[in-house]
Image (cartoon, rainbow over all chains, first blue to last red; front, side):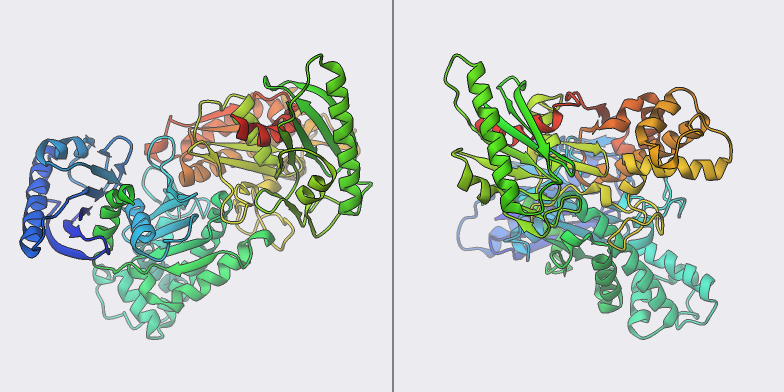
Length: 320
Length: 320
């Protein structure tokens, strides 16, 4: 049995996972209440002990705990630290793995970023089991990615590989923070889709079925749902998103030549209104030697438990 | 002792390489004379036997031949075939490794593309010996690349990874063939630099020290030399090239997080007039977690013998 935790800006989720990739017990608490790494580690260790106790109470056999895997924004696998996370309230470097080893008796505690955890989840429990070279794309507040080469997750020289969301796609485009402009995640994440929706209102000037919503209430899910329902402005936004992501993935494929891209996250639920323009733009922008060889696949990980599964795969990986 | 061959559109060079990475004997013949793969393989096998005989005549000891490594445009390591090479006269698929095994008694014959061979050369004989994650960029007629991750050359699912030259950098930019537009190698290869020089004449409308040259005679080397000599148009061309390449490498770094980029090829000899804007644009476009961590290094491989060394490294790699 393994343990997995997904540290998000709002909530931290913890769960126990059996060898078949099923979440057995789970709990959650608010991440944003904590501004101090050590206090947060205390709370996380307490939650882990609760999940372990609950799991053990459900089982008649004694349980061997292989370890605890954690996915977190800016989680560095090499250093075991969360480094300058943009969306968390504890700033600077937090040596989370070391803090947890002091608090928990577990043989293995591993940290990586959330998108790498999702890629591992797809590899260990999902549809990437038999694929040695693939790239996982997670669409949420940001756009994350995890890169597999030769059956290994790529960490790069400093532990931070797979930051495809920051690739520049529109020179002098939207402002991204960091003083950079026009990067992929400002267009193709959930946040980016919402911005594109307003751009399409500006460009087309016509009515939308979301007109009665307050601006602050409009989410990427609303845009996806409206597109699915036939709204032209929303469809234009999803079409633009699909085409831009397809073109960016065609460029990304040139680096590691993956057999597949897996897509994960809320916006993917929009279905063909996003996927059709995405696949068409992808094939169109591939060089001839790459055409008709690379699949675009919607992740098979269960949306609710995917982050816990992915994080737990970080320790399951070593026991295969 | 190993053998290496660089198959270029114009010439094929063959050489023998000792364990210290020194070319001992070499020969060359015209590639463009051959339109048939089997006839070409006959000529290449003959050249290899000549180099082996000459090497053996220079040595008092008996020589153990480890194998023959070949770098060629569109050389596929997995299949051993040259597949639809854009610059060679033998079209379609040429199963070069199989053809050579029929003609040569060597334990190992390996094929890859020219930029992958250069990356291997840098890893085995050059300055990348102790670097596990790096990317080699070769600037010539095209822009090639070879990607190392975890001390392994990345081939990807079909043997064609590392085609960074085809990354889209300017939406709707210069025509590239394949119906694609705005890809990196149309700006930052030797051919691209020549095109940029004419763009700068168009934009700035002023005189250049190359004014007395026929258009057809102007080469990237002329532009680099003119820039080095202080010509403003040529400097603007090299500055544009450096900035665009720097920005593209900053995006590329996001996929595999390399510790270094190595640059190889004629245009790199322009020195700081290219490298200074390149390094500044690179750092400027990196995300904060990547800044001041990734080196831009001019390849230390000897220009004349680099391709033979790189190709021979393909078989030397297995004997380490």
